[in-house]
Length: 177
Image 1 (cartoon, one colour):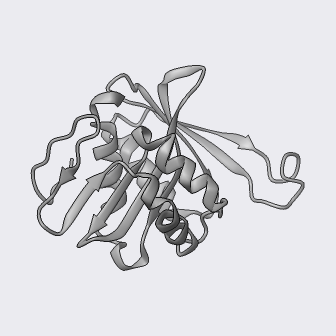
Image 2 (cartoon, rainbow, N blue to C red):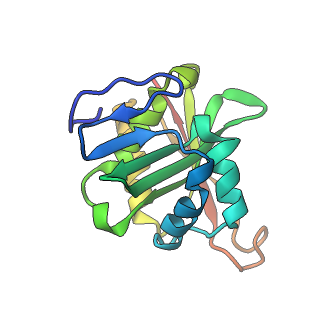
């Protein structure tokens, strides 16, 4: 639940929390800004700017962009799994350093889940490295809101999959109630 102000969401509709905050789908014009935001958010993995343009266009219905007074404050990238359309995989959650500690990541996630086009989502999946405390906190909060039925398993092992070039990624699967 977003506590800043009341809001409404439907497919393609901008969610407005007042004159300072706008929650919306990203567009083609946001790709470079998303790229720069993610660059400012270690430990997130950098993808190519082209990837961020694809997220902002091809996957805009499953992504969330938040602006504060016209500046990008946060971004969530996600997609519905091709073989399980009721599962929303959250790829990355980025919050600008200037806006951290205000619950924005959770507000973005909640707003995304309330989109008309995502009402069929029954499960959230994400992967998190062991030391990403902010992501663990965010998804544990979501899990708690939905009854603490989430499960964590190894998705990609640092040694056997990444050949020690990346930390182990743990899959956090959260059924929604």
